[in-house]
Amino acid sequence: MNDCLNTSLEVYVPSLSKPWDLRRAQHLFNKMGIGASLPDIQWALSMTPEEAVDALIDASLQEPVPTKSDYPFGDPEHDPWQFSYDGEDDEGNSIRIWPNSLNSGPMVSHYFINAIENNSLRYKLLLFWTNHFVIEATNLAQYPSGFLYYYLTHIHTHAFGDFLEMTKAIGLTPAMLGYLNGNRSTAAAPNENYARELLELFTVGPDNYEQNDVEEIARIMTGWKAEFLPWADNANSGYPDNPGRWYPFTFNAHIFYPPHHDWEEKTVFNKSFKPDGETKEDAFQEYLWLHHEVIFKEKKDEIADFICRKLYKFFVYHEPNEAVIEQLANTFKNNDWNIESVLRQIFKSEHFFEADLIGAGIKSPFEFLFGFLRQGNLKIDEDYFKENSGEPHISFFQFQIPQMHHDCLSKLGQQLFSPVNVAGWPGGKSWLSENTMTKRWSVIYYKIEFYKNIMKPGSVFPFPERTFEKFRQMAKDLTQFATSSSDFNNVDAVVKAIAQHFIMVDLDESEMAAAVEVFKGDIPENYFNGEIWNLDYDEEFPYSSVPIQVLNLLLYLTKLPEYQLN
Image (cartoon, rainbow, N blue to C red; front, side):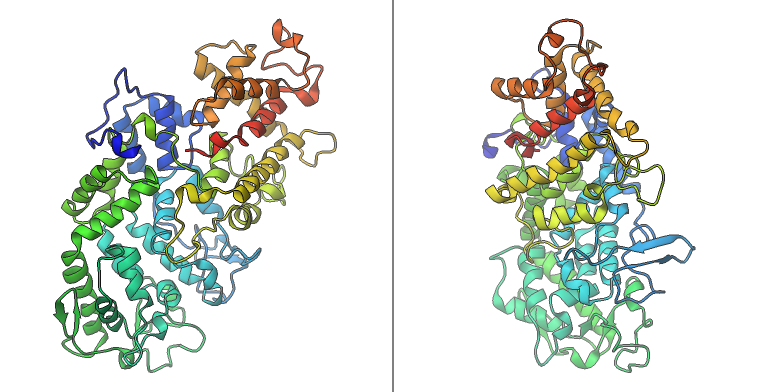
């Protein structure tokens, strides 16, 4: 299918046959983020597609790199072996490290969820790059929690920038050195794990290197260490460059142990290098040579194709279009490995907005779970994730951060920052199976049922109507947007408006008819044939009120196979 599409990467200009409309605006937000609320769609349609893309990318570029207090995975003033504590950062702000509970590794922070819920491309990119430079964070439970913070900060710093610089930076992070056994690598016994993945999974791709290249790179990587407290400290004469016991929290600090490094000549891709001396700086120059003069110079075509292919599969469609990949690869090389230039070209292109690519992808568990909240325009700390200690509150176990993270991990198969193996999640159709489909239904069922239950007698929520009534207003807003009228007693129009907002493809007649019946519920049929029912109706059937009708419809829609598409 994909190879038959328009392959032009010229900027998309709307036309009668290819309008800038609801579906294409939804498509843009699905791919650049995790879904679109109605205000998102209205905002995007108020400008040209090119302007919308530039605005979304520019906003993400302007977002600051999170600090420890924003994105708290570690702090030098506390025991680095713990994943969980309450305390204060250097400015006296209260912070929390999420616990290593529910077998989930480092917990998803409130900050990350809030950022991606605001449709930040920066955080969608974070998901991409942590699935590329894989470290499997669950294996970091034995390390200082700062290792993960240090790794993520590098990802944030380089996410839109120079891919060469990001590759260099990640290779010497303590998380990567620990995960791929760099700490065990010595001149006498070089460990090949990182060397192999650097080529096969991080840069040139499979079948574009020889075993000898792996062996030589492994020799180059000997001697670089990640400090595993508490046995290494300032008193350890083997680490004269150690900036302190809290090394993992000092950005761009690298530990090197000269006796473990192989100082002889190495040859990679037929180019040779021998360090001038036997100091840390000499070894670092060798490391720079490997990247600048060898891999990214001798294998630039392979790198460009491999990375652009992965970007395309993640952001566009799981089956790459070869003609488009070739064009993107040329852009990547011609812009000195600048990632932003490739993203702008993809998202602005005629190809990206082809009708056959809209709703053709499969939602990842994260997109499935958090995308629903985004589509409903539900707000953190207003509609979910509020701390139980606060009044009024709208918190519930189903929507607390540990439970949401556990849902992604154990039920749906996507633990953030910990892909299934070093090759990462393959994505696409692999997300769905008979087992994962039933779990998706179960997870979303309990989330929606929560909103149905908050208005029942005996509810523990003191002011639930503010969220409950949002579903009535959502139905009104979507109907108004879809029909350009306030005719809120047309049940078919209401259901169609809600369905086309939450599902990326048009439902067939039988599915739409079933959706209408679900929406009507136990309200008598004659109420819909006259002037009795409308979106303000609540009088005789309080537990068949409009918000309940909307939620019942969402329960039906989210179980449809079409809801899995993005």
